[in-house]
Length: 268
Length: 268
Image (cartoon, rainbow over all chains, first blue to last red; front, side, top):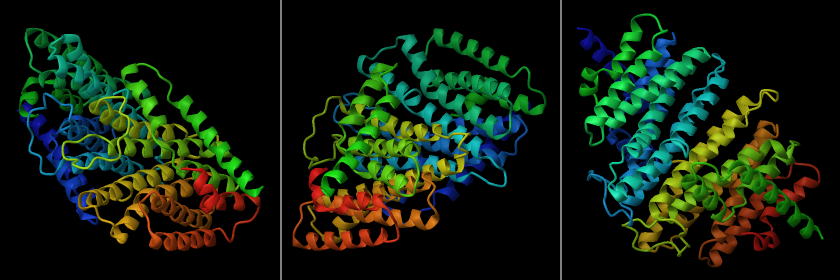
C-alpha cells in the first residue's frame, strides 16, 4: 500500500515535469533545429534527479510549481550529456551500447550544444519579480552549471573514458564515476528543489547529501555489479536515510522511498 | 593617428579579458579536465564579440570591470562552439580546415561540454549584492543562452552544414549563417555590455543592432567572397554607423572603428 502510494507520487511528479517540458520545447521555427531538440529531449532515458528536485521543494514546504523550471533544466542537462556520450566519434573503439540514431552525428552534436543553453535560459526566464526570486534563481544556475560541468558530470564522463578504454572494473573508479555523474546530478537536483522551495541552509545541505547518496545508488545499480556493490549500496541507503531523520511529515516517507528497492526496480 | 588610438583601445580590452579569463580558469584539480579546458579556451581564435561587450559597457558610461564576466562568457561560448565544429565525427566527409588537435576527440567533446556551463557559472557568480545587479545578470544570462543556443549560433551551425555538404555559395545562405553565428554573437555581446553598463533600452537596442551588423561584416569577411560581398559589407557598415549617430563623446569613434577596414585587417 505504502509502496503504491510512493510509486504514484513519483509518477505524478514525472508527468508534471514532462508536461512542463513539452510546453517549453514546442516544435517551432527553425524546425531543422527544434524537431531534433524536441525528439532527443524525450528520447533520453529519464533519471530520477528532476523528480527529486520537485520532491525536495515539496518536502521543505514549497509549491511544486516553483521547482518545475529547475527540474526541467536538470533533465535537459542530462539529456545533452546522454546525446553526446553516444556520438560516433572517430576514436571510440568500443562504442556505448548501440542506440538508435535518428539523426546524423553532426545534428546530434549540435542538438546537445543547443539543449545546454536552452535549459539554463528556461531557468533564467523563470525569475519572477512578484516572488522576488532572482537570488534563488541565480543560486540554482550556479548549482546546475557546477554539477553538470567540469567539476561534476563532465569530470565523471572523463573518468569513465578510462574505464571504457581499459575495461576496468576497479571499484574505486566505478564509485567515483557514479558519484560525479548520477550522484552530483541528484545532489544538485535535491539542493535546487530545497533552495526554490524556501528551505533553510541545513535543509538544503541534508537534501543535497540525500541526493548524492540516492544518485550514487542509481549509478552503481546501472553498472555490472557484484557482491561488493550490494554491500556498498546498503551502506549508501543507510547514509541517505540518516539525512532525512530531522524532517517531519508524510512527505519524508515519500522522498525516502527513492532509495527503497521496490522503487528502484520500478524506475529506471 | 586615430587608427593607432583605436587599435590600442581594442588591444587594451582584449588584454583585460584575457587576464580575467586566465584567473578564472586556473589549472586546478581535476587536471585531466582543467588542463584541456584552459588550453582550448585560449587556443580558440579570438572574435571581437567579447571586446565589443566591454566597449559597449564603456560607451554607455559603465566601468569596464562590470562587463568582464559577460565578455569572458561570450568568449567561452564561442570557444566551445569552435571546438565542437572541429571534432572529427564519422559523418564529416569534408572536414573543416585542419586544426591541430592536441587532445583526442572524446576529450575535446567533453571540454566543450564543460566550457558552456562554466561560462554561465562565471557569469552567475558575478552577481554582486552591493551593486544589486541580479536582475541585470539574469537578463544577460538570457541574452547569452539565446544567442549561442538553438535560435542563434547553433542555428547558424546547422545551416552551415548544408553549405559544407553541397558546397553552396548561395549568397542568401552565407548571409544567414553570418547573421546567426558572428552577427548574433556580436549583437549579444554589445547588448550585454550596454545592459551591464547601465544603458537605457534605446541604447541597448542601438548597440545590439550595431553589433549585429559589425558581426555580420566579420562573418562575411571570413568567407570566400566576391564582388557581391564587398557591396554588402559596405551597406552593413553604413547601417552599423547609423546606429551610433545618437551617441556622444570620444568613445563613439573608438567603437565605430570596429567596422573600419584598417581595424578589420589588423584583427582576426
